[in-house]
Length: 423
Image 1 (cartoon, one colour):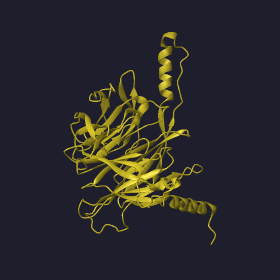
Image 2 (cartoon, helix red, strand yellow):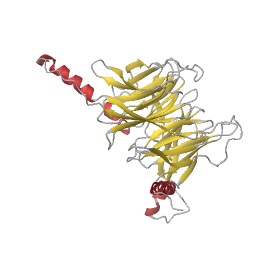
Image 3 (cartoon, one colour):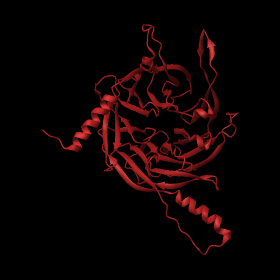
Image 4 (spheres, one colour):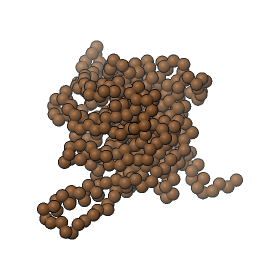
């Protein structure tokens, strides 16, 4: 039976994606509890995992030595690259919920959070230990300003300096800045502001609401801007230099469920931004933003106010406005969404350990799921309602690798990571 050209093209794209995603690697995480977060560094060669066992583990993508293949050719070296555990350390006294990397321009730094505490860690020079180089991590700063649980944290783009944004259940976003790069023990608060999160269900988190997720805009043509997700909606905030505070730039329509994850794809090679968010009810939304170039000029202004007018027009030109909202159908409750480095592929994960890849047809503007990847060790489905199967997804920006952690079973001891190569 002959298929329409559009359906044939869709089938060919899905087959191509399936062929490219054939390679996978299952790693033993060595964690003794659920893995809460996975984070890659800026080059995609290092990975950090955190878990409920209070430990953070650092993985390096290096050449794995194989004694059985002594005559290995140089052309096969890439096939022997893999993830290897380089160091591990106890980060907090409680469950470590988030971990994030800083840009390598400022060194090997990671930030972690547990309950209301945030710690910043720095990797030390490897020391010789029993004939092998051993890497160690030391605490450089301990941030305890939050009054409730810290739910998200992320370093800002390197062009704006060494800054760390944190969101907590008290509804306050705090911006820390390392003013002296030679003394990383000092992280004063650069700015802090409260995000309106009214009508928040008190049963969702122990903190009773507040900020649930955040994502920075990495575009070099935009001022410091980040998206914050709460239990009701997604809002954009931008740094205002004269007042030295973050002001509300845009607020999206309210969600019927709590926003669990938000990801920003900057306008790289296109005229608009994309912001993806997934909510507690399982809906996946993609917001399309464009710049508002409309300005109001008053020819009667005198020369004294010309500078203020130029500054005002500049702010209006940099203003973003919501152009459209796309709701993508998903057959599973979603927990995490993430873009690739070019902002063309959106990956989502949720219950069942299924990672879905979404792409937008530029001609029609419609989104479609081009591939589904099973991140579980096997294809078994949950047998009881008490067994949780979820996956946290992070796209490696350099080698297009998806890292997912799958947890399941009647106890919280079975934890593995599945690395899938997209090609």
